[in-house]
Image (tube, rainbow, N blue to C red; front, top):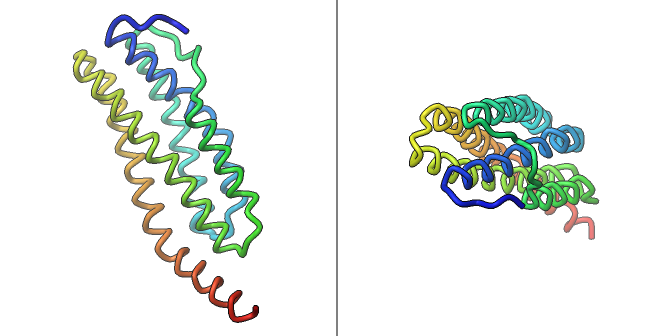
Length: 172
């Protein structure tokens, strides 16, 4: 683990963590989209995959501005969140219940990313790294929008999941 002696070192460390997180997510999102039953959820996850690839590109631009490498860090938080997403994929439940579980897993990822990007943006702001701030803010805005879309989607899917739960209870 590299020494962190300055706020710039900490920013670079945070960006490496985010870069690894986004790279992991590029691999996980197609699996989540494939597991979704709702066409709207499939579409939303696929759309976010395209955005996530853009997030990786923005992070790589930020590293160029900072004259640093994106390599060298594993994001253990994202690794755990993706493992939870894999559990949601494997849920043995009616489609709407699995979809509700997938949305929950996706929102936990979004909330982690919002926190991490916000922290990195604050560091970049303090350092006067305006170009980096701009890149991070663009991604932060997209992550917030994705979270809002997931919340809206959850409203209808949760209703559907609740109806399927009621039907299951009536059959017992």
